[in-house]
Image 1 (tube, one colour):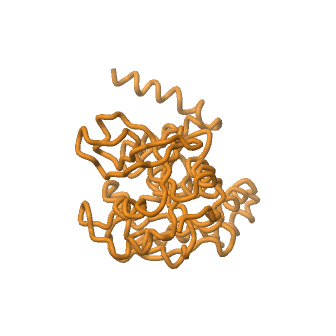
Image 2: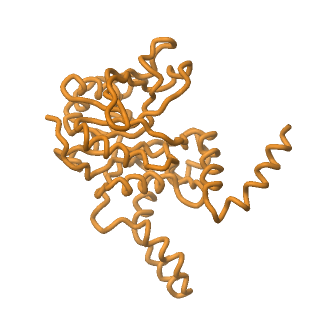
Image 3: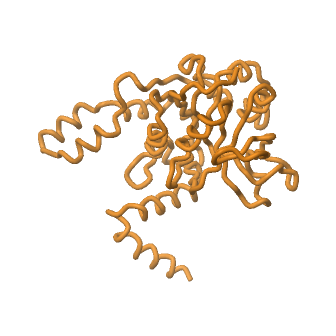
Length: 295
């Protein structure tokens, strides 16, 4: 069954170990590393809420309890801020606090891949369509990626994947979709392949870490054999689902920063700092001097 029921829930797989950021991630989950002054996970949650998501579902692992604490009230901190009349800080904290009962947490006990992490959320999602946002990927654009995807979903139904264009000779590094007829701000998907061999990609549209999926993906993932990296791959599950349901690609017009990689994380900090009126004047000049000094 494929329909256009409202997308109310979003899944955030946050169980990864973050080994590329050791030693920092020995004590701090990679999702809690800050881009300027907000944790990476906050940017992704903000994108989901801006798209109309009502229920946030986090698939966590050992050592990730701080994420749950972050989306809760810290009584001692609030009390101290009130005593010191720090109204701006209190307003800031209240603004990031989800309404009571709108966040859920479940565990992925074993690191068996993205497909397995999604499957771990099945009981919390239930029998309804849901969004999936990879928390390493944060985005800048006039319109939030998931918001645009929800708008396309309301036109197309079925399943929607966020995509962007890469250089054709880089397509072998990504999950790639083949595209057909235009629909809204995207295309009908004609096929999917995970990291195609050089020169064999059906297009240069790569999957950027945002999905809207129907619940029929869950029984597929439950019985799916392990794929690349000896993990349960979400792309393999979507390929099976596409035999019975339609898939559309939303073409995101913006910039995505992979904060799971050191270079992407640093670039995100620079880009988001320059975007802020309260910081641009303080950092733009020194950045130019740094770059000039490298010549």
